Length: 103
Image 1 (cartoon, rainbow, N blue to C red):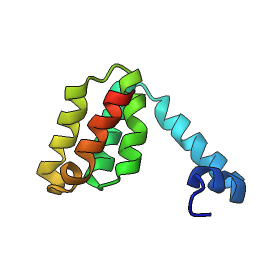
Image 2: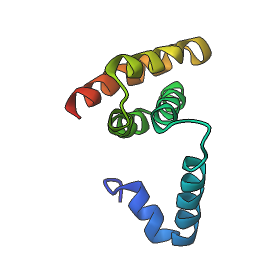
Image 3: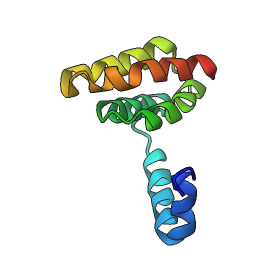
């Protein structure tokens, strides 16, 4: 089970909870205070500050699809330095920029 996609397992094991989570994401995404690119950059910054490489890399293609440039990805991760220390940069900067180049 370790090699399975955790979101697929989540959906299979707890479909009601997964559906509610999906609904929450859709509701948050439908507000109009932030554009889609800004939302993705904020998400990347939050997850980078937590050192969550997988989440950062997963959202790079979404950010790029919304028009995020490489320097915006870089600066979003660099900004985490002031609030979370070097964790985001040490863990996430290189994988994020590599993922950006692959998209």
